Image (cartoon, rainbow, N blue to C red; front, side, top):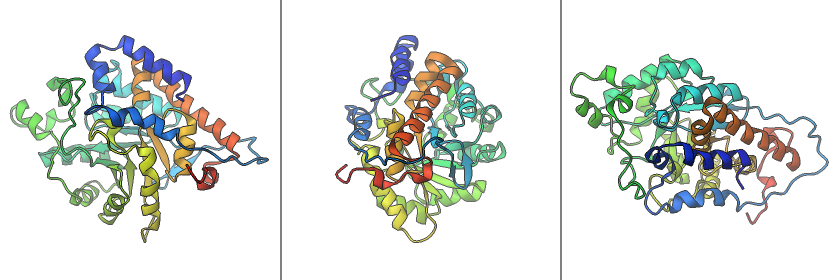
Length: 354
């Protein structure tokens, strides 16, 4: 069950957003089966709490890629947040910093990267390998210079999935928004720039090493739903993966992330060598969902739509409310499960038949 604050934000966002903007964020691909199944998949798991443990103080602190974070609830990359609120990415970055959350900024941001970085706490940069790879390279160089601590390569989007609800791939994005971070790197017609900025469907695992060498930053691959893909990404130089089906916006009927996570974690743990970092997104709507994800072996979770709805209804304060609601619910769930720290969460908390 979603938290009350998140339910209210989702309900109110439908009323305050322009219809096309709401459809842009809310819609999934195809028949929206993957979209609908995501929250329910987390609810399939059952917990086995420990009793008589000292949980007078619950510590949510953890590390991601060797760096400390206040808690394991971060913000997923979402494009064009200016459609949800005039403050867009600036409000979300500031809210993430205020609530102690990792922020993953989108390549399709509606705000210049440097301005986002000035507002953010710890942040990573989400990357598409674009048809014009020089555009990707310039953005990555700027993100690294602005203080991004990692790159998140989206791997599940060779083409943008068709959204039947809107009758196309996405709503029309004006040039000034689509090219806000790219215009300075274009020398010709903006139309040619738009074409070059689309995702390159020929990109392969080689892109991982290219991005790492270009930036000097660790690279995670987002969109992984299979154990063998996770291993292939790590073998190609990735520091980790994000288990994601793109919020149900790419291949419809793709397996829910809650059901794919265990296979990916198992493959990552069994692979020889350093253990890769595993994050997960998709349908997380409560601290109990986060607890399940951590028990399955995720290092952290990322929230997408709950952040958008909070932004739409309350700007920075609305995003803070969404993030702190999930964070505080996680602390409460951990206490009830007998886990005083993130390091005490493991698979033994899950029922065997979950």
